[in-house]
Image 1 (tube, rainbow, N blue to C red):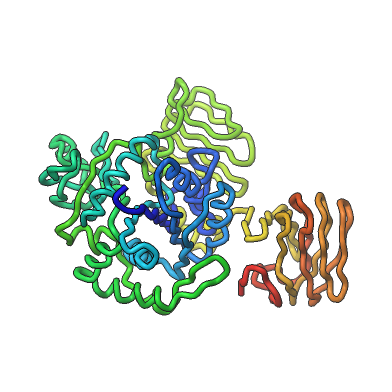
Image 2 (cartoon, one colour):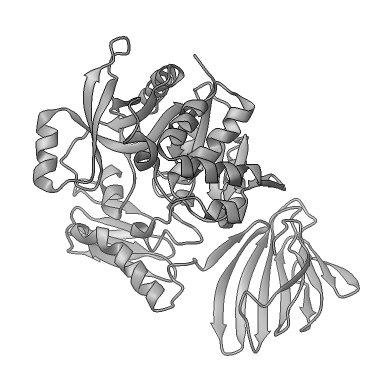
Amino acid sequence: MPASIHPVILCGGAGTRLWPMSRRALPKQFLPLVSERSMLQDTALRLLGLEFAPPVVVSNNEHRFLVAEQLREIEMALGAQILEPVGRNTAPAAAVAALWVQEKDPSGVLLVLPADHLILDVYRFHDAVRQAARLASSGALVTFGITPDQPATGYGYIERGDAIGDEAGAYRVAHFIEKPDRARAEEFIASGRFSWNSGMFAFSAGRLLEELGKHRPDILATSRNAWEKAKRDLDFLRLDEQAFAACPAESIDYAVMEKTDAAVVLPVDIGWSDVGSWSTLWEVGNKDAQGNVVRGDVHLRDAENCYVRAESRMVSVLGMKNAVVVETDDALLVADQSQVQKVKDIVGHLDGAKRTEHLTHTRVYRPWGYYESIDAGNRFQVKRIMVKPSAALSLQMHHHRAEHWVVVSGTARVTRGDDVLLLAENESTYIPIGTRHRLENPGKVPLFIIEVQSGGYLGEDDIMRFEDLYKRD
């Protein structure tokens, strides 16, 4: 290998076209949409078999513990987890990752991968990465072009120019083209000179920074400022909020790849998909004899070419064709496959109506475990809470609600005012309004409790934290 490969996994994105599964607090990269693992986990595991440095993950602050936990589950050690205080697209994210790599390994090659893509042919992917690393070590800025199998209008295209003599299958980039209409896409396919733009890249850290300085010095300067002012927080590297907010929001394509004269495209056929809609999941899914793809407890009768996903109950579909049906415990989507790109409009409607079904699921993950809503009504709310072994909620207090806790399984250590209680299965306690309290799991198995809240205001923002292992506000 000509230089060390430093995978950079970009973990932003909202995935609004995959509602109701994908939501702001739990977007598609953290969901098991294709396999039994999340897309982030599949992206990280796809690297196994290559010689690579520990990956760098760039994520937003809100998802920091979710990223760390999902990678811990697959035993993937990280080089760094860099936290963006605000989203600024891929160019600033790649810039700060390059600054980190350059400091650790001046000749290192960045392999930039979105966390939410699917690649079915991992062996060909590895071969392509090795070739891209060679090209990047010689100064090229490499983009992986996907060999198209249809005149898709949802992707940008890359036209290849002259072949690179000593690297079979690699070409100079002639042009980047925005998403075309159908007729133009058909022309591109017929010519045989075009690839889809995958959004995956390889370049040396120094070369990327050099090209940013040449073409977008403002992005380089603001990214460097945010990097130099970054602070360590637990296992995270937190970029300076004010400095990073000043970065222009721009993609790597616009900022560098479309301007540089060192762009190289490596056309590959690796079973790639950006999993950008429910119809895409139907395309890549395992189909039955009638062309249906199902997940969960699903019963079909006289259905053809449907994608049906049941998350919390049995779903039956009768006499439908080309339909998408996605069920969660608080929302249901039914759509024709030809309309799935408009799912983002539903999310816009929910946002405008001040609803919450696009923000969170009924199960909400926290660094200590999760809680899920069971029931709610006037002046009360019932939750099921899971606390991971050796984890603890913050020492906190509520101004407007009291809480009743019943241990379902496991052992709970409860701080209640000046008292510390140890509660076993079927034991309970009461936390009055205004009382400092903490819930901990001192055991080696998950702790499950039922929490009944009662009071005049039950919002999640009614909390005053005094101590917190996770340094949350």
